[in-house]
Length: 63
Image (tube, rainbow, N blue to C red; front, side):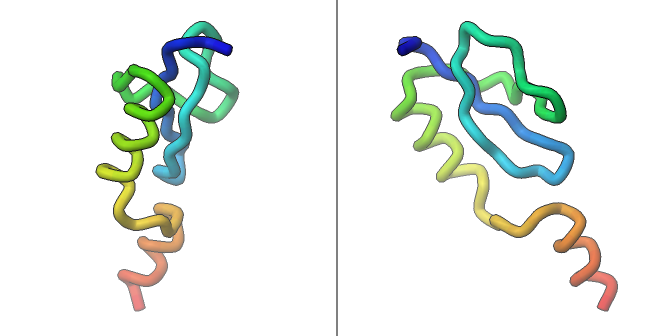
């Protein structure tokens, strides 16, 4: 199990963590934040305050 993880984000602005020794999965890009699993989870908890996908947020804003 890797000691370092990276926070990744997809086009819908959904976050995840990914092993730091692997390339980002297709459809995801690195945010630049790396650390232990716990640090990355804490960072995601801090920055991902609206769990709705970007497309849903946009559609709801148009209503």
